[in-house]
Amino acid sequence: MIKVQARGEEPIEFLLKRFKKICEKEGLTKDIKRSSYYEKPSEVRRRKVRQAIKKELKRVAQKEKLKTRRRRRRTR
Image 1 (tube, rainbow, N blue to C red):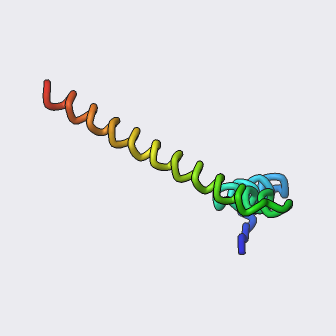
Image 2 (cartoon, helix red, strand yellow; image 1 turned 45 degrees about the vertical axis):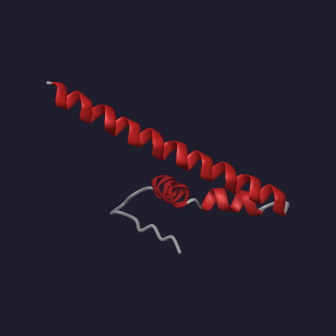
């Protein structure tokens, strides 16, 4: 459960802003949007495969970025 406590005499608008930011960070809004309508099992599988591919590409890109940094340091 997400809780937000007021800091001193903080206005409600700032509390709501912090609450929304925390919800977004935890992926709560995405989960609610995803579960608000029926998603066929084939669509679920397709989405998970796309997420896995995206995650793998991101990991490979990060690895390549580290390699290029190491090469630059060695040549100096």
